[in-house]
Amino acid sequence: MAGADIPKPRLICILGPTGVGKSAMALELADRWGGEIVGADSMQVYRHMDIGTAKPTPHERKRIPHHLLDVVNPDEPFDVSLYIRLANGIIADLHRGERPVFVVGGTGLYIRALLGGLIDGPGADEVLRRELKEEMKNFGKEHLYETLRARDGRAAAQIHPHDGIRIIRALEVLELTGRSIVAHQQEHHFREAPYEALRIGLGLDRERLSDRIDRRTDRMIAEGFVEEVRRLLDMGYTESLQSMQSLGYRNMVSFLAGRQSLEEAVRLIKRDTRRYAKRQMTWFAADREVGWLDPGDVDAASKRIGLFLNPKGL
Image 1 (cartoon, rainbow, N blue to C red):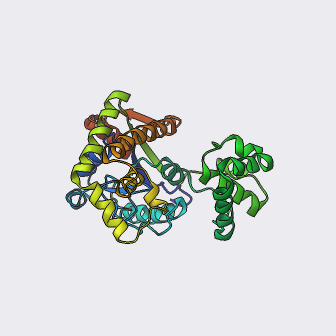
Image 2 (image 1 turned 120 degrees about the horizontal axis):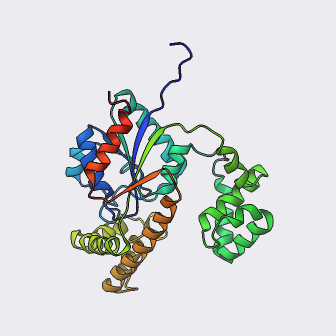
Image 3 (image 1 turned 90 degrees about the vertical axis):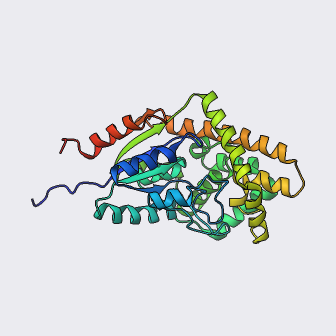
């Protein structure tokens, strides 16, 4: 019918903290519903970084098609804008093929930007960004944060003083547009979301999640995490790279450089992973549209998907 609304593509999002069991549930659900998985993990996009990122195994990827894994080398740039561009193209292809799309991961920024659309701010200015990074290196994050607070108090109030990436981005937007990044974000809230999304969050109590994280870390070591990082260094990927400074990898690099024992490196990985999981839960808990389930409750998740994909029972 002329003028009828075109239905938005539907996405099934499986989200939650690291180690909770998102991949296992997504594999089972995608198998049941004949779907494919689009990753939403800022580390699994890197090639050669498999064990430390808990990337799906070759067997799992053969069982269910996965997208947005192994996209760039560890020394190549990758950010949320590139993620959105690639994800939108993949989702459009799957939607045309009438394949259910499962967006799976723990990078909250990627999921939020995908579901809400990317804020219309200026692209990265590499010269300006390099200057800001150099200033941060020479004078510290606190200095740059104070600069932001003096020039854009609204943005500074929403950013932690130690969050260097967001401090630099806020200053970059201010310099390039003359407007606060907060103003860009507020304008963005009035735009229509590009997708219909079912958000399924997986959660566990702190003790059970900590136990899973500890056991997964031990399994990574047993599967060759140390050797994986040694290969990356041998390939010329230095510890100064953002990818190599990520969770787990920086500790393995320190161990291989003789700066800490393997026992201490493993202890720190477990501690830092628990802290990261806590931050992820805080992020996702702020989204009131997330319906929470135990990671073992696949049947309940599948029932929700059925109602979402076929709301009239057709």
